[in-house]
Image (tube, rainbow, N blue to C red):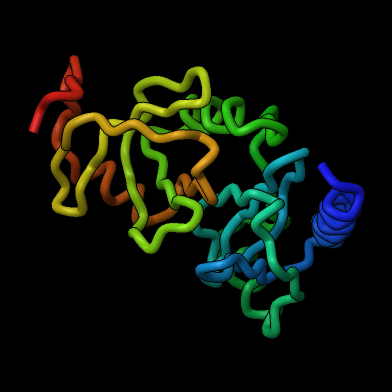
Length: 191
């Protein structure tokens, strides 16, 4: 890693940690879209944000190297009110979640949540939602769940391609409630 890149990442982490300590509502700009919420964890590679819509709406893990800009949210009062109204103030993280490596992050989220939402780097595709089956050697096997909701065949993802991972949001909770029972022995060859 170049000295310039290391210094840039250190500055980003410092901004995130300061906002976390002060419970500051942020907009984190990434290549495709922004994430709005409260930073609740900072690691070597990832930060964890409790998203705000303006009420609490799950968590998103964002790859720190992909952040283009960090701004204080323009209307923080309504977001704080939304969290207070839901009984979720101050925003809180997930105890013991390792944000230093992608593999430990994905494994930790998979232990806590039945569904993960994946967004890929350099991709215009949508959010991929599913139940993690295996996390090992830089790879994630996911039993995908469609919006209908129906279970699809296993898909395989390189952990290095992940840009953000969402969990615990209302959309994913609804999918989980509406989904049929997950196949007991998922096959990578199923339709």
